[in-house]
Each structure stands twice: as structure tokens, then as C-alpha cells.
Length: 404
Ligand SMILES: Nc1nc2c(c(=O)[nH]1)N[C@H]1C(S)=C(S)[C@@H](COP(=O)(O)OP(=O)(O)OC[C@H]3O[C@@H](n4cnc5c(N)ncnc54)[C@H](O)[C@@H]3O)O[C@H]1N2
Ligand code: MOO
Ligand SMILES: [Mg+2]
Image 1 (cartoon, rainbow, N blue to C red):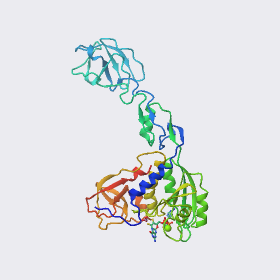
Image 2: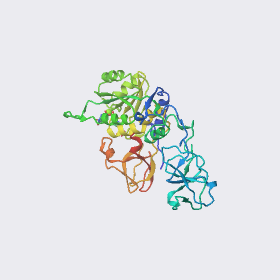
Image 3: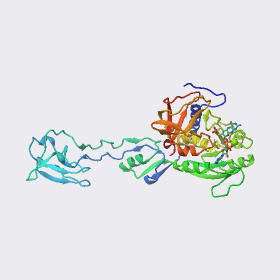
Image 4: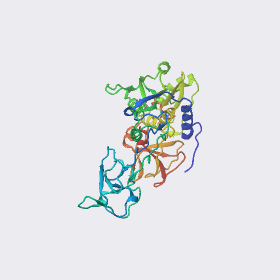
């Protein structure tokens, strides 16, 4: 495999680097306190600091008997108390053991738990332990997971079920999170009609709007639906200018070189385009600019181009504005289940599946075919300038890594 530069097309890494630098220059810095129940998908604004030791007290990892090992010389021990989870034990009487259950606090004086399967009880109810016993066995020490005051999650953490569970375990009822990113979604195209309406000649249904709004909602954004914009320069200027209250305008279509592609023109007259034309397929005419100070990402109109550029470029940009550090999907290396004979000038993101551990691309990779992505489990990355034989390794980015 070898790299290959295309004059005028920006390589993927450079495009992403530029976008992330633009994001860092426009960070969202307002925070809000939200209940845990509302925090899924949000970004932590301040580190989560442990307000207690976890576990708060030493407890038993097993159902069994607690003893002080130094008190035991092989003799049977009487049971002096019974301790269930949720109760407070008294100190262990010397020369005795305590009946104890999983998650119950260890009584002061005890340091070891034996599981009930390993002991025998005699008629007098005394417990016969067997060698060997190891001091501390089956005891979960106070603070073994987390110490009071310790930083548990850094600011910039994207909260999901695991982080919310962890915050709950530390007793946090509310978290300080970045406010939602406000994103306007604009669909450009004279041909677009909303589902539910009849199609006229030359018309198609608007799929990008639904795709993007659902995706943005999963990302925790607050969405302004700016509807459909006709292919008209003056209307484009007006529409962009009317969306001032948002953090980002996300449009689809109108960024290529056609005579009805006005989004790029409107952005260019408003100032410098920070980004246009990338060495990727699909997604070449991806555009970034500003309109009256508001960042605008112009996603190419073809639905698979919208999907790829949103997932691999716009999504990282948006997360970085909220302070998330790791914003790019990792993916993993898998062997190709296909051959690739013609090295391309652009890096390709094939809509593909894994079959028997190998990447199989959808047969029709046209950027107009959204069905390819519904069939796919991920994006298979074919580097610019490379050829592939079956079994050669390439990166596979599961859609699940970028869809939320
Ligand atoms: N002469 C050239 N033509 C094109 C080039 C080029 O380099 N030279 N690039 C092609 C590539 S690559 C792409 S990608 C598209 C991008 O076009 P635009 O972003 O300008 O988008 P449109 O022209 O408005 O639409 C493209 C295509 O997508 C359909 N579309 C648009 N919006 C939606 C929507 N909301 N829902 C469903 N489908 C949508 C539209 O009907 C077109 O078929 O340009 C190539 N052309
Ligand atoms: O970049 Mo376009 O998205 O190849 O079809
Ligand atoms: Mg066009």
C-alpha cells in the first residue's frame, strides 16, 4: 500500500485536524446541572470527584462466615451474630464467628470470610473451618474501588450507561454537564419533498433531514429544524442569516460545482471557506465556513456522503466543541474479503459487513444509495493509492461506534 496525493483535495487527516482546531477555537463553555436521569449522552463539564469511599465500609464478597483469623487455631467457632446486607453489625465477640451474607458489612474485629460451601456445622451450631484460610479472603476492603476525594471521571467524559452507573454508585444525584449544542439542520434542493406528500415530476423524498435530526438527537444536541431550502442564492443567504441563535448550521447539498449549488457560493461571499474538497469518497465536496460568525458545515447531498461526512468529520467536530478529547472512532483491523485492483485518488469508505471475519462491501457503493448503509455494519477504509488482495488488512469502523 502507498499514499497518493491529489492536487487540490485535502487528505482526511489534514481535514480532521483543521476541523478539530476550529472546534477548539469555539468551545461551548456554558454548563448546567442535570439529574442523572437526564444525563445520558451529555458531556461532563467538571471532573466527577468521589464524595465517599467505595465501598464505604469493608464487606463480604460471599455468603458464609466472618472471623478474625488470628483467633482461630483450628477449633470450631460458635456463631455470635447474623449480618445481612443493609444492617449494622456489632463488633465481633472474640473467639466467635459471624454468619454473614454477600454485601453485608464486616463486623469490627473480623478480617476474613469463608464461603459456606467450605465449612461444616456441628449439632451445637459451631462452625468448623478448614485449612487453609488466608487473611482478608472474600473481604472487599473499604475504598478498594475509590477513595473519598479521588477524581473518578475527567471533565470532557461523554456520559453513557456505565458512567451514569458509576456516578450513582458514588451518590451523585446531579452532574454538571456542558449545555446542549444547538444545531440547525437545513436541507437544500428544489427536488426535495417530505414523506407523506405526493412526489411530483423530478422530485425525491428528503432523507437527509430525518437521518441527521435523529442522529443529532442521539448525540444530545438541541435541534432547530430549518426545513427545506430551494436552490436559490438569495434564499440561501436569507436562510443562513436567519439562523443566528445556533452554534452550528448543518446543511446538506449545494456544495459541489453545479449551477444550482449555492451553499458554497453563499459561504464564499461571506468570507473564507476553511475547508472544501476532501480526498475522500464519498464526501468530496464537504465544506466548512462561517456565515455572520456562525459555523456552517455543508455536507454533500448524496445520502451516503452525508452519512460518512457527518460520522467521520462533523460528529468529531461537534464533540470537540463540547470538550470531548477522544472524538474519532477507533475501528479495528480486519482482513479484506474482496480485492481492490484500482488505486483511487480518494480514501474510500465502503459500506460493508463482516462475514466469517472478513470485510464484504455492499455491491452498489454509489453515494446515492443509502440502502448500502442500512445493510452495512460498518465503514471499511480503503486508503488512497492502495490496492488490496483478499486477506490484506484494512480498518473497519463499526457504525455503532459513530451512531451515538
Ligand atoms: N461536475 C461535478 N459534479 C459533481 C462533483 C464534481 O466533483 N464535479 N462531485 C459529485 C460528488 S462527489 C457529490 S458527493 C455531489 C455533491 O453534491 P452537492 O452536495 O452539491 O449536492 P446536490 O447536488 O444538491 O445533491 C446531490 C445528490 O444528492 C441528492 N440529495 C440532496 N439532498 C438530499 C436530501 N436531503 N435527501 C435525499 N437526497 C438528497 C440530490 O437529489 C442529488 O442526487 O456532487 C457530485 N457532482
Ligand atoms: O463524494 Mo461524492 O460523495 O463521491 O459522491
Ligand atoms: Mg450539487
